Length: 337
Image (cartoon, rainbow, N blue to C red):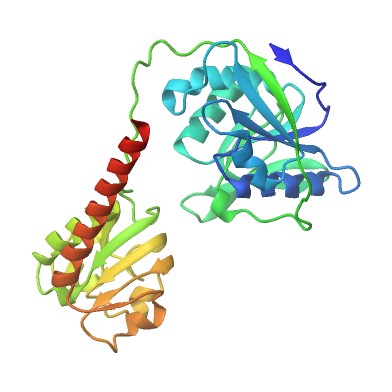
């Protein structure tokens, strides 16, 4: 292993995805809380072949640690966990904490790294500082309680819900220094080939994109349209209460006070009026309804609304999305050639 410069004795190490500024913001916030006068150094790790050092500079870490291999580059996903966890365990001997995003890859890497370091590991949590000690917290018993964990073995390796993170009191500024660490690690020979598919989340409360249908669809056949549009968008299928009561869809698809509460990036309600019992359980970054009634209450919440028949606009939008994906894939192939 070759390290080009000495390491700090008090560091918070973050392993962000590309442009994952929230994780680095949280690292800075924790550093401030641990020691406002002389905060720990925030180090962002960029595995060669997975994340480019320039891509994580936007989070303004104090230092970027570019981890390379003697032969080849690191692999993303499950096939690269063995090599990356070995490298990360070697690179965090003096870390105060190791932070990763709470994704499938981040969780696997956190668990493998903690096992190698024989340190504590908590996933899908938030961190706080009390009496100069890091504590992890997460909901328990279905959200009816809040569990808090202290760490006996250091450094703790944790995955954080980046969508619920705060920001530092004073955003960091400046140009981070960059350091290269070359390691000699092998891959897991047991994994030959891994493909990742964008599969819609079955649990509506966790789904990031949702297309839902209402009573205005007129019958259960209308949900063929909803499923077609959801497939094109890569979204889960939802419904308002009337279609569930009528048996058009299963009750676990129901969104509303008596159903699921959603917190999505994109919500496309089709033929849903938008009454308070439904909208009280809807939180969406982008809400795009399709409804024939221009006075429907749902439009009061819309970022962009489509006044028209879902049976007309739904298939047209689905076809347009699929064509755009095909065109994008074709352009990528031409560039590769």
